[in-house]
Each structure stands twice: as C-alpha cells, then as structure tokens.
Length: 293
Image (cartoon, rainbow, N blue to C red; front, side, top):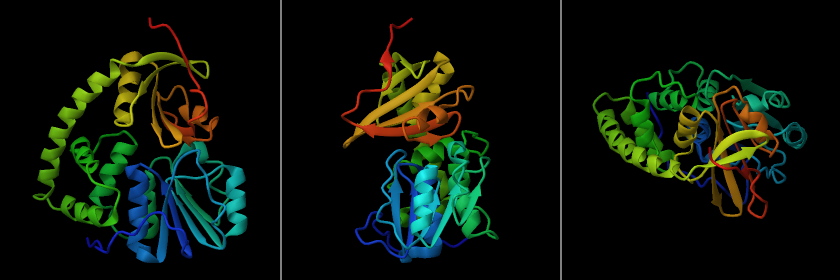
C-alpha cells in the first residue's frame, strides 16, 4: 500500500479552495477521514476541522463540500446544499441520521467509523489501512483488533498532520516497525491509568437533564474517564473542559440512555453511548451538583 508524503496543508485558511473538506475536530476518526480525502485531493482542497455545536459555514459558497465524520442540523444542511455545487456527507453518528440525506450524495453507516467510510468512499477497491482499522476499533469501542489500545495511545502522541500520519500508516503495515508503537503504547497506557485514577477521585455527582451523572473536569482522556464512570458508577459520565471561549463536553453512557439526544439539545450530537457538545464560556454549566451518596 502506498501513501503520498506531501507536506501537510494548514487546516484553516482565509480563502477557501474549490473543494472544502470539513471533518470532526479533535478526533482521530475525523482526522483519519480527512487524511483519506487528502490521499485523493492533496492540496487541491481546504481542510477545516469543525466542532459539534460550533457551525460556521456562511463563507462556504459555490464549493464542492465533503462532510466527514460529521453532519449538521437539517436547517444548516439545507442552507449549505442551496449555496454550493455539491455536498457529500460521509458519517456514522446516529444523531444525524435524519440530516445526512439533505445532500447531493451521502454514505451513512452506524456500523463503520467515519474514517473507514471515507476511505472506502474514495478508494472502494483498496484494502483498509491498518491505521484506520485501529481507529475504527477504538471509535466504535469494540477492541476486536489486536493491540488497538496500545497503538491508539501511541497515535495520540502525534499531531493531526498528514505527513506524520502517512509515515505512521506505512509503519503500521510493517510487522517489525509497528512493534515500537506497541511498546510505546504500553508505557503510555500505564501512565494514563495513574492519571485516570487521580482524576476520578474528583468526580462530582450531578443531575443533568433529569439524569444522574458524574462530572469530571478534564481536557484529556475523555473516553477513558467517561467509560470508567459508566462501568463503576453505573451512571452517565460527563467530561468537560474549557477551551478558548468554549466549554467542551463529552458524554458517555451504557447506551440505555441515548446521550446523543441529550447532546442535540445543546447543538451537539454523536452516538447513543458517546456524544458531545460545546457552549459559550459565559453560559452556566447545564448540570446541577448533587450530594454524593
């Protein structure tokens, strides 16, 4: 399998090119989808990372637009479709299943990750890179592929840039080269376990949208902390952090409570057991602290 090694292009640009790739921000699955698109478009496209609940598409006009690992609300999609030549949606989030059809073309599959959907869209006859197989394994929280935890822990140490990811993709195809990443990942996971143990000591029992939850203030390890809460506290996990003018919120559950529906109330979205949203820092936190049991 061959991966191009061109220089990474800035993700945010003032002047948009004729092809615009919008992808889920701060997420290996979203960037993995952008990386798949980049294998096709290279520097012919503008690549823009987008947060849940932070939609700024007014300047996207008369373009060929790809939405990867995300989809906007019905209202925004109608506006985007009306103003552009083509809108293609490649997504798997259950919260957006009713909006993906407001497009020129779409692929929606809740059984695949956004990056794998993107790869198979752009390269239908090519095998899925091991890099994306591991990303999907983590994103869907399956862990059916050997060493996903270790490799994804190692991947998190690298920036969301195309050139480094090409090198990683090549080396993960090599049985010998990948061993270093696995060993690095093992060390990282041990350290992360200690960090998680410290952070969860500060979990606060709260009420959120009528549901019992535990909230932890942390800008890192959102999935790991959230799933620890779900497993050990039998409640919704809320992991939140300030970032610039935003408060970023990640939600986790056992799937019985559909947190994507809760996130949608705040302009976000996601899956039944994993979702997120963002809101302005001036707003109050949308949960209320309760006495610990």
